[in-house]
Image 1 (cartoon, helix red, strand yellow):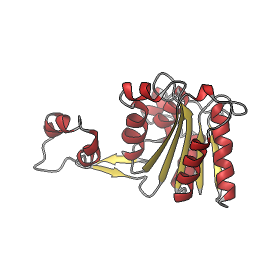
Image 2 (tube, one colour; image 1 turned 60 degrees about the horizontal axis):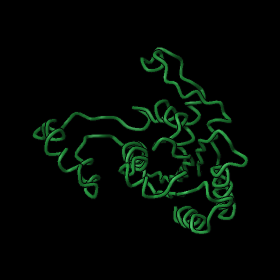
Image 3 (tube, one colour; image 1 turned 90 degrees about the vertical axis):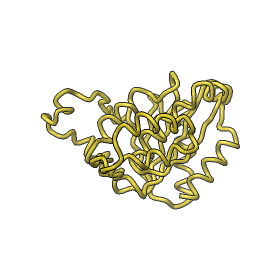
Image 4 (tube, helix red, strand yellow; image 1 turned 90 degrees about the horizontal axis):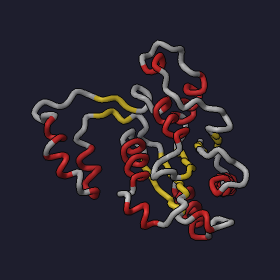
Length: 216
């Protein structure tokens, strides 16, 4: 099963809505079963309450539904705009409330002989070099519960690629690496820069979407 997680308040005429229709069209052409999670349409509450945080509240049925959908999937496509160099608050709340300890990951005891200060000293030095990010993060003792699930992250940007690079590719580091890969997913990314200049999806972006979805 394929899951599309759509996080934009407008699902008819926005650039993200165009991307959503393109992804749906590709899945239909590939005869793939899919479901759409439209966080705004579902009126998902992104706020993690004190009671929920402290496990005093009854589980939210919508959260449980989303978790089951993700667990039963082999591919999750995220569609959202980059605002203030990050994801919309709605999607951040989704990660806070749905991609939780116990469901998506668990920490294990730090192995004997590998002291915790390693990650605070030597590890901090190595993490300056992004190409060995995955090597260093494998040293962190984590049970990654979302392994075997592929993720495709499709972002629209109002500005050019230089802005994305200027701010250290923040969306990819936070969403792709620190959340999805942290929990075991394999991630592919598609960036649509200068989206506001276009009334339709550029062919290059359509090709990237088709290629990414076909390979998973």
